[in-house]
Image (tube, rainbow, N blue to C red; front, side):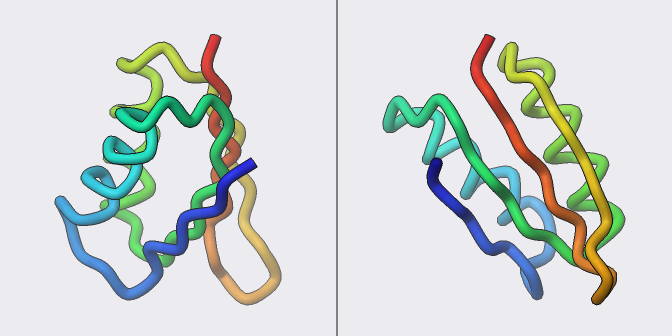
Length: 70
């Protein structure tokens, strides 16, 4: 599973990072984000790309997404 850390990045950068990984054929991703807008946008993009999305908030406030191709 590839991990992408987009903490500190503003949109659309988090979505573009995820898209690049998907375009490389990555089927399973872990994404770390710290921006509410990125959380919404990455979730929407992944679901539209037919990836399942599991979201959890870590103790430090970071949002961790697990994305898997369906």
